[in-house]
Length: 397
Image (cartoon, rainbow, N blue to C red; front, side, top):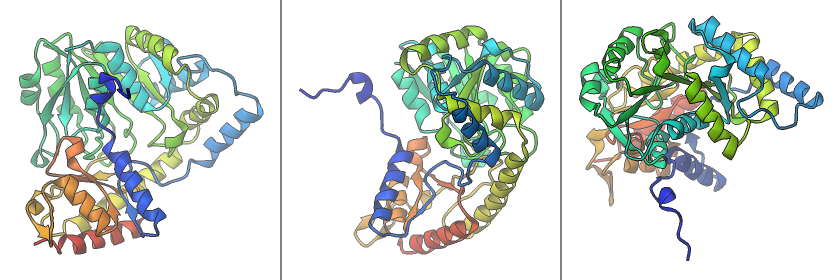
């Protein structure tokens, strides 16, 4: 008998990782693939952060760390939240985990009971609904269209809330759309949430520093709801530290204690050396963050301009992160010989196998009429990728 658990059978595999794997397989066969499927900065981790990690190894920071993270790292996070966001937290309100992904999952597992509903604006990051299903909760999707810059309205939020609603997950800047909620837009959502005291806001702010419209706005800035906000953040995107696996939760102490209990049973504390590197990231010079942000903004302007020139694709102008999420439904029903494009997953596979550009179909993000491209790659790759996409899509009749 090879029966996996019902819990596991409820989950779908990660579409982004699957597409990246398919891209790698083609590359291994000698195919020149441009990979725009993975949400990962193409920069190297800054030298001063790497130096801190080397020093940590030399000083033997190699033993088990406290489950919620080293006190010095939690202090660095408290300082970051105060200096950059104007938010007051205590170290007891911080827990450090193995990446922001675990931070999100810890929070959902700590809060959601069987049958609880979690509101997830669509398009969404592929793992949110799967994590809710893992916790035996029910994902409730609220659709935000390209015409609204992929952002939901207070009216949509109000209509989605029921007595079973336990949380809402807000990702700003957004993966997969790059949309950024302004302070005024967050306040509109906050005013709705104030009427529903049971609802917790899970604010995924991992793309905070990759922002093209000015200062980042956090739901936690509003004092009247701060005690119901869980901030998720980390070092992966801002400091090009995806492989170091350091994320954190900043939240009311009762939620952090719950996450600590959970984490203590299934991973314990995150990597000791990575924590020391993260400490250097938050405490050290921030020039590297701005340099990378400027590069991403330049690439964003380039890919938006070029993609707008591709017939049949509808494009908005993202305000953050490093993704473009074009609407491609005008190609559905078209064909290249016997190959018919029925949905965005078909289109993404067609672009990979025929055009040799790896993207991800929007079905996995809750928006089947779109597809995602990551522009965390060189200007040259962007120019060549969009040239290939334009050429490949022209074959569809």
